[in-house]
Amino acid sequence: AQSVTQLDSQVPVFEEAPVELRCNYSSSVSVYLFWYVQYPNQGLQLLLKYLSGSTLVESINGFEAEFNKSQTSFHLRKPSVHISDTAEYFCAVSDQSNYGGSQGNLIFGKGTKLSVKP
Amino acid sequence: DARVTQTPRHKVTEMGQEVTMRCQPILGHNTVFWYRQTMMQGLELLAYFRNRAPLDDSGMPKDRFSAEMPDATLATLKIQPSEPRDSAVYFCASGSLVGNTIYFGEGSWLTVV
Image (cartoon, rainbow over all chains, first blue to last red; front, top):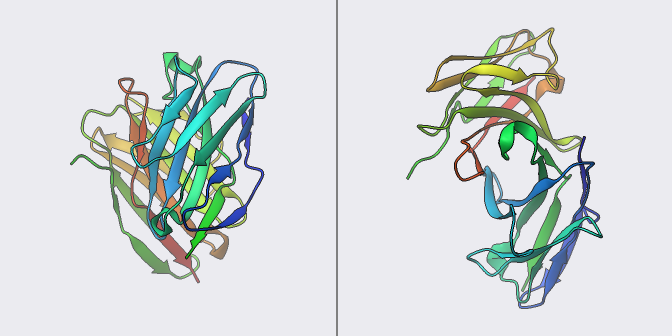
């Protein structure tokens, strides 16, 4: 079984400051890793994912995350945040061995609320 | 732009009433998930289907919840009878073996009074 820990429930930052949202996972098998973003009163949108290959993955809006197998981490970073990045961010893990792909159950962390202040 | 469609978006009902939530997965997706989101528990998987067959519904209270896929374009989640503790946002999501990505609907916001 897998589990995901997001260490910070809330992260307040000022606009244009860097931010890191932490995510650690636990699993006895190989996993796929995801970050989803939820804007107020909306559903979850995929931000980025790690399936294989380069351990550094990027999103189109400036976020990046690095898969660190030895530390079982997948922290999300952005060098300069905008007001529009205010949202809740969820880290998720999926068992690679489940039916040959990531279409098994996604296990989510509790979420981190990012609040960007002017 | 393909997306997962959920109805109703908002529902307020009285305790004891039956509630049915519906989901239209993205065309061609063969895996459908139901998640529930609350402040206390976060996102919890209730059930999921592959090729319309239920694979895991261990997260769902069996006495009052039921999930079905009558056909490939419709998934339903029913609560009967509803209780105040069922108040939550219920998300449907769908995915396929191609792309390894799961897409979420906008959610059904349920309030049981």
